[in-house]
Image (cartoon, rainbow, N blue to C red):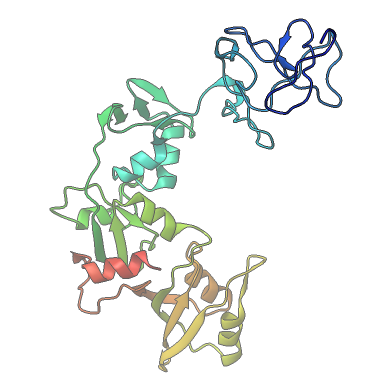
Amino acid sequence: MAGMRPKDPRTGTARTKAPAGKTGAGRPSARPGAAKPHAARPGAARPGAAKPHAARPGVGRPAASRPTGPKAAAPGKAAPRKAAPRAGGKPAQAGERLQKILAAAGVASRRACEEIILEGRVQVNGVTVTELGTRADPRRDEITVDLAPIAREAPVYILLNKPKGYVTTVKDDQGRPTVMALVHGVEARVYPVGRLDFNSEGLLLLTNDGELAQRLSAPDFHVPKVYLVKVHRMPKPELLDEFREGFRLDGRRLKPCLVEVVDKAENPWLKVTLTEGKNQQIRRMFAAVGHPVSKLRRIQFGPLDDPFLKPGAWRFLDAQELSALKNL
């Protein structure tokens, strides 16, 4: 019948005429390779405005239009930052601090090696270095002290019973004999840790382990040291109590020390334990109260003692002694 629209055989309803440019039930025409338009969303950009980025890279865009540069950081995550350069734009130096290398090579203690550097006695690859922050690589750089090459040595630990009449240094400007003259047959360049004055005797540690020497000598690392001290006349008990509580010397209070009477003779022997090592501390303490020291002998250094080691003799530490020393 004229004017009547044919029915859809699937639904039984009259077919409607598709708008121009569309086919099927309101679907856009499918042209090969054409991208599908995005569905309209509330708040979509107005015509002519910049298009918002897709929620996921590549969705709704042809493959050829995907970005090829660095990926944007995921939402909620900060983009990775490059390491900031050091002041002046210089990168950090590789290697170890020069004074640490020298101490490990047995040149001297860490602190003494710093003085050697400041004196201009150290060269790295032929260039004299006087700055303490300088780093070097002992495996690749040529390091010399007084133009003599250094070499990493195996660590050596020696216990020496120092007699009177020797100074506790590697070299003495006054020409006096040093404790180094007592250590024969040791090729490693060892040096003493701490001091015993010229007229004192007793146990002394020598090593080329700069790290350990630095730690044992640090002001905040108090290694207990035990001395036998012979003084003129017996001090009064209250005076010994003053030493035990912290004696004032040269306007400052010393750390408390343990004092025990070993021999109650007219000129008694006392056992004194210190946990700090001021220069000639025991001699100065007793002299300040009218009881000068006539003899002083160190019988223990931290965990190290040896009553059978004769004056002038030395020996290497055993494994147990070394372990106890490093675990202080």
